[in-house]
Length: 190
Image (tube, rainbow, N blue to C red; front, side, top):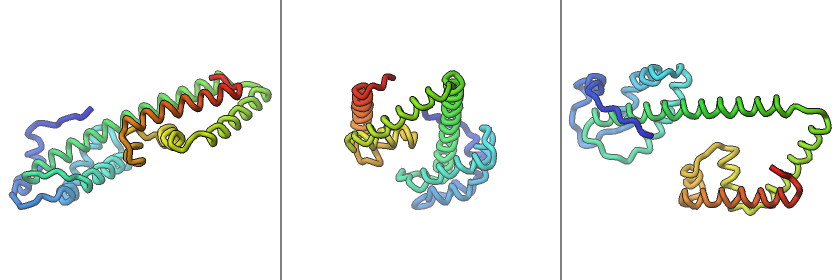
């Protein structure tokens, strides 16, 4: 979900010095000159100094990789503000997702806390899962590892593997199915 910031406050933030027309507007220069203002925006969205710095680190990468042509510095600033707000929302969603997952893990751990026999069974199951993962084809294993251990989405995995995101989703599905079949054959039920 991309949030579009459309109001005249960007013109007030930018000030008249940013409207000077030049042949090419450097996104990085505008980012550097407005770094504190972007940090204030992140702070206003509830991020502490270090978290705001992390968000602005992502924004700076976007600024460096930006290939878009802008008419003037004000349009660059509006784009940077939009990217900053979107990154803040993305980070908030990631934190909420992490908190939900952590609560679920703690709930399951409390629910499943058992004696030494159950612990030995779990250890044996983990050993079988690791062995089964080693038998998977690399084209199926790599997307699974990137998805579930590195928390990457299919677009990011596609960039890393240089394949289409649809192909990544297909490989993830096939990998999960192959893993489930192998584990079921070895006697482990989900």
